[in-house]
Amino acid sequence: MQWITDGLNSALNYFYYATGDWGLAVIALTLLVRVALIYVNFYNAKGQVKQISMREALKGLQAKFEHNKEKLLEESTKLYRQYGIGLTMLLPLIQMPLFIGLYRMFTAHGGAMSSTFIPWVSSFGQSDPYHVMPILYALLSFVAMMIPVVPELAVAGSMLKRMGLPFIFTAIMLMVFWQAPVALGLYWAVNAMFTLIERLIYRTSIGQRLLRKGVPGTA
Image 1 (spheres, rainbow, N blue to C red):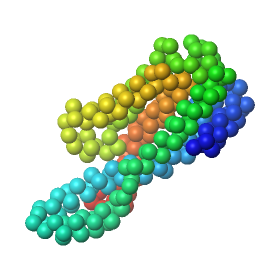
Image 2 (image 1 turned 45 degrees about the vertical axis):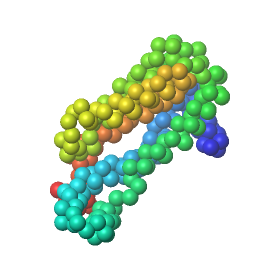
Image 3 (image 1 turned 90 degrees about the vertical axis):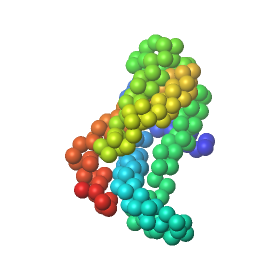
Image 4 (image 1 turned 30 degrees about the vertical axis):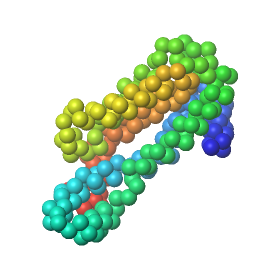
């Protein structure tokens, strides 16, 4: 894990020398990481489209082989293979090592960093006294998670039900960032903004065509 922290610190220092401001350096680092993960996130979004498309076919198998569990398992496995669904939904966890690395980095080196973008703190190592960054992150993150990658997901359940998981996740992360180094809040606020823009692009006609391309049962 230390090599991740060292790598992030080297990249952050490079961006600082290029921009002359630690706030801009954090923003640049965030964008670098998100651009590097564009395909990972697209693959994850495509996996959601595959699961929606596969739902009706799976229901048909469950009805057809209701009394033959062995055959149901066999045919379901074939269906999953046909749609190419594997560990897609676990891919966002790739961000976890980054979170730990960033937390360590800003805890260790944040005291020597500051920015004109966040003038209400003297250093990036201290927490946000007004909680601007944690709240900004929570708002952006919640809105992004409430935008489904495809319209079908919007009708998959009631609004209250669809708000449940995003609300719980946002509340947990808000508590994590509440007393964390302000630089960490800045990183994840920019990260959430990127996610929101990404979701909006997915909902365009071009984005929908790319997500549905090659998926059985989609237009």
